[in-house]
Length: 491
Image (cartoon, rainbow, N blue to C red; front, side, top):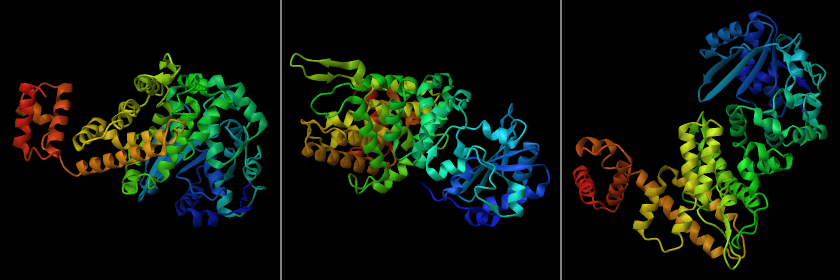
């Protein structure tokens, strides 16, 4: 149970969030109509957090309010949903971006509007004018007909009505995110309805599922959330490719079935993403910075890497075989996993960049492991670095988490230590190369040597890069001559 504040004043908000304090004073002075602070901001504020996003509902024209706010804070306003008349204002405050959404009140009253919301903890509101003038006693002075304050204080996630999931099935995925993000327990009826209506998630457009999924993938406890996908019945509808991995037996290198191994891989990956220092002490800072870089819609690489981990072994279900001795094999499972994650990216309408990232990371997740079966020379190491390319750091983290989650009787601690040592060498070589600019690029091959566009350009550049890093090429002219020899005589 959480101890929530028993009062709310404008001064309290201003101390915790000066931007919102000033904004509420401004809104109260506009005189355009009733304006209410609603939803997630109140929820998080009561829990001691200051979220970036702020939601309001109003009896006024939301566009007029949005324009006033945008002008005063030098922000940008635009229509978010034309049919619903919802407007968004984006304001950059130094390094922090604040987002305000303004919507008209749905129905005949604020209370009716709140009834259409997903969960009781998101269905609280306060009137801005009243908050600007007096101290509010909590929960007495909240607009809270669904008892969200009480549920939040007791750590309960409860739907606002029996029709909550019917009104918007994407709330099925959102429920799991809120439960784990806030450490809540499902109210029994809510959990039963999630199981009952799980199939409705198939009616939700891929883009909306992606929004919820990417928010979920920001969680540091992804494995727990995805484990719940199975128990609620959502797994077969959100990630149907994964259902056949549940209970699928593996060989003696593993101690878990494929699905349980996948969840443990996610758990190990979450641990590495939180702090890679134990495995890669020299590169933990650079890894953390790298994984914060965005791939799509301000979403970090770490989120997409978690999605890659979820799908890294999905191909085992379609490639499982047994030899004459009864030993289990999954030949070329990474290729089948690669195809499955590409289909997932299409279904979720991910960007080309994010789709290529998933395709490459999943498809390459065995490359280091296969190379580890022999003693790797410096030249072989450089070739692996070249082959893994921009996904090297990501593949290192995924494959290391995969190894940490592989604890069968045939696995040994010595093999794991050797593997981590190879990964450290790869990281060292990768970042050393990052600090050395290439001698030539693709345009040089096209313009100087007349090479036509196509896959050969990339392959030749890889060979030139390896030769440069070995010290065989000193300048641009050397690199062009080397590339010309490759074109003329072959590798």
